[in-house]
Image (tube, rainbow, N blue to C red; front, side, top):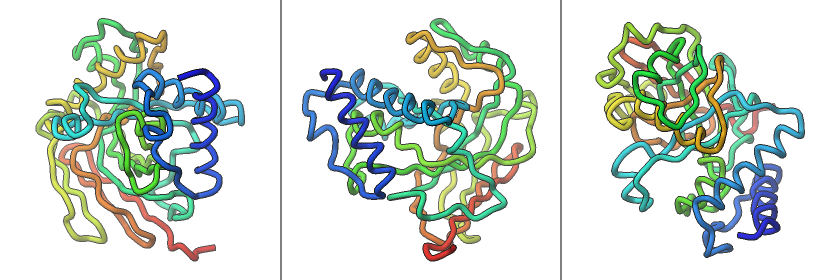
Length: 265
């Protein structure tokens, strides 16, 4: 893609945030777009957010299951950026109007205590860099109409990121076997999905090492204090105004997100 097309695509996505109206798939508008182009579009939006006063607090990892990778025609995950404005409190209703087509998924969040910079980061390196674990919920959203996304569309759209809700009690990673950690996802008190940490590339630490190496190739280091969402343990579920969603992780704890009613002031 030409630089002007990258800026044009980023502007269309930013416009969807403002208007609340999804846009047609970028993969149709720019049929020659590559994964590298998609990350350029993503970065253009990150620059716009930081220029407006927001700042990057971490990253999210997506496409961690083999089934989703096969569906998207890729062989590795993708990533997006988490800015400060995307973090929401679990104790207050989240305005429904902030999203276009929200879904929600449970994830294990890493808070880093040491820098990680690839290439060459191993799982042991990743483990040593983690200061603590937190239970997390990610509201995923798409600025692409009807979620008709290819790999190019989701990467360009900041890996379909919407919002992050973190639990409040940090857990020492040495106390948890992340691969066998189980999760029950409840919608309004009823079990909606279950899963284990093994769904995330065998263990969420594999996802963290992958991310460090992926962004390291671009000269980016993951820094102390940053938050990394390691990828969904279950399928994403639909999220509607008024819903209360709880993720209960064995050994890590619970986190709840409440989506406000559409007509709430």
